[in-house]
Length: 142
Image (cartoon, rainbow, N blue to C red; front, side, top):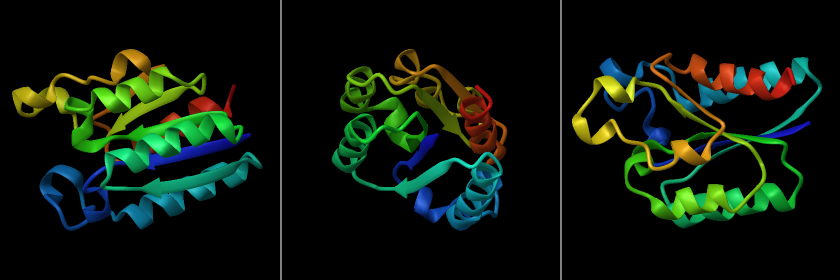
């Protein structure tokens, strides 16, 4: 089993950016927990972050071309703005679970709508960074 975790804009600032919303864990902390979990299942994991929409699209396309079995994707603010990422997800057969650290439905009105959710197999939000592990477990326990 080969899994991919993608992180969008500003997630490289975890632990520094709005800790009252996103907590004090860094993205490296999240990565270490995800790697440890996937190892328990003898699976492979790639963990990536980019602030650039085009790079995220390229990684989504490459996931299908390289045999990835599932994508856990925290698209950050692109959730609410990117038709291009929505179309990239729609263009592949690899299942995607959308993850958000905060509960986007309890925040500002503009964050309530995800342009990507309808193309994903599920969405996890509001459970902090534990949402990444839940999404990975969904793929690992198939």
